[in-house]
Amino acid sequence: MNISEILSSLLLAASLCADCFAVSSCSSITLGYVRWNKVWPIALAFGIIQTVLMLLGWLFGDIFVGVVEKAAGIIGFLMLLYVGGSMILEAVRGGSEERNLNGIRNVIIGGVATSLDAFAVGISLSMSHCEVSKVSMDLVAVFIVTVLSVTAGIFGGSMAGKKFGKPAEIVGGCVLVLIGLNILLCS
Image (cartoon, rainbow, N blue to C red):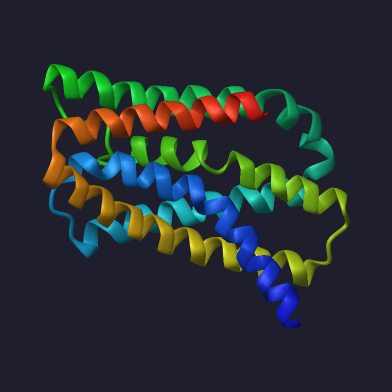
């Protein structure tokens, strides 16, 4: 393990968790005041989902390469369209708060939608025959950076939601839809 490998792993992790940060920020606008005991399970879930999907991509890269190329963009788009669209509709209607990170279903949808790129990266690592030690370092970095970025996103998003209310909720929903559209168009 040298410094360039560590830096490479951290840069990979930072690039993979950018959408996790964005989704957790936008989705947490409706949470109001958040406490650590609510944030950590969500952050851990995102970190675990991201890391497991990357690992699965690496383990089964040869099998999944065709499926991921065809469906990942559409799946990610549809998931984020659902979460973002629900946020927008509920903000306009003034309904329940089911569209945010309250509830395991929404956390899993957000986690999977933002981790499809990690699955694709795992496949690329498999195809390039990366050594187990390098992939292990990448997986650890992805987990740690994702947990930290989702934690920061949740606290930042909840503060923005408290300050700006419904307009922030609508903007957050729109951002999620745009992230999904970007996934769809760039896949």
